[in-house]
Length: 294
Image (cartoon, one colour):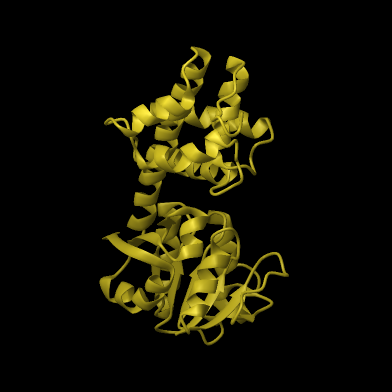
């Protein structure tokens, strides 16, 4: 397939690389020039990248970035043709997704929202899980590309339902991790060995995928961004905005958002979101770590 891939960040670069490796004809564009994807052409603008493409795949930072890439100066809108699919793997507002889809529909262009989970390791290894909203026929056309980048597709409903589901998923990740971080901090302050606590967690119903994935990084004091705190904070704000639109209260997430705000003020925005732990540690006067990092 002829694919324009827009956005070569932590996730996008690996995703585009895997699409090119799978033998598709790929043209890439990135807001900051200089990034290269082996086997892909480079375009100077989103419009140029989308010229002649069957699929435009995006993975950019936020709702404003999607709007600019598609509808802004030198945006994809200039190159839209009937039968094209825009697939968006950014995590953005569900309401905005619907509006964007409505804007391109008169030109015969389909919009599929396809946010994903799996972090940068999943992007690298081609094992992402895609959370998809859109018409089944359009998703079927995209399956060769999904297969190049991921291991599973979950269609959650019509356009925007992928984004809505992704927000619900990230809500759980943020709240689960906050509970884990608070438990680690308290246990450490009370003199409990962190590694022994983790062994107990893994042996009981308290265990979770979030804990299992993040625990080794925490014990090694490695806050290299797999999912940057600034992006999780963005997703938390999106979730709270979406909840407000439908008059749903999220008191736990509102409290977690305050933690992210303070962690950002501490300068941790470009670290992994697990670095919110360091704020709790600072307040408690302790540091959680394993024997290797000690």
